[in-house]
Image 1 (tube, rainbow, N blue to C red):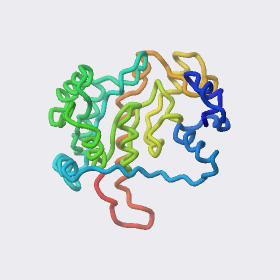
Image 2: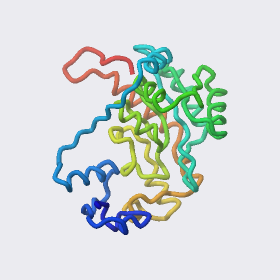
Image 3: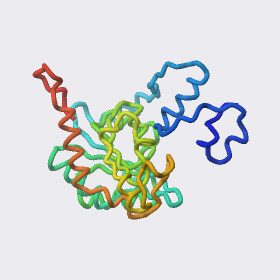
Image 4: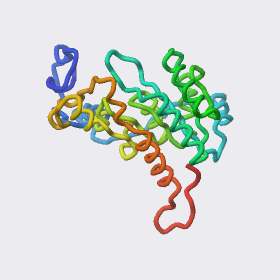
Amino acid sequence: RLGFAPEQTRDAQWWFTNLHIPNTGRRHMLDMFFAFPEFLGIPNRVLRWDIPIADTVQAWANKLIPDNTPAMILSPCSNPRFRNYRNWRSDHYGAIARYAQMRHGLRVLITGGTSDIEVRYAQTIRRMAPDAIDLTGQTGLKELLALLARASFLLCPDSGPAHMATAVGTPVIGLFATTNPDRARPYFSGEWCVNQYPEAVQRYLGKTVAEVSWGTRVRNPHAMDLITVEAVSGMIDRLIAAKTTPPSGSSSVSGPC
């Protein structure tokens, strides 16, 4: 029964294991999970997710995001958990949706579940960006995955959709202040994360990131306010510029964002 090193476990997992992988240190969670097959003598890493999506679902997503249509998906809310303050302000998302439409001509789609907070967030965003398409409560996992595969990028806090986008190769602008992106970011989108975690740790815990344990959360409801609209709009500018800049030595444009 193989488990994490005892000093890295939670919920007394070590009680139920008799073999342990070496302490993986301060690494991303995916790298930590890869330590298990490596311990078993399987060193090769394959970062591939083959998730089947029905043709009918693909067709539905194609209507919402046609070919060559630059689109941003907003998934504004994380899973509600006790004292996990990962949501950015709804009016900030509204300002970003409006900016994305007016500055870059992006189609904006809002996704989420049926909870009261997700519905309220979508309503606020739509008031500020009336042309945004509100799909809140209308997508299952496969529908969301199909949309993410067609989107230019996803904007979201630390949440499941960030990792779903990673699985289909879509870049993610992740918003982090209460959790550490070095541990939990969308795996291929580290350069696009807006990271205020170090500042939040300093302000609300009085320490540096190096001084807190790996996985420490900043449990303060104001921490996400450290992320500014300007920082996020600037990251959108950077991402779009990167996606539309031709490779060195090429005169062609790689395609719409």
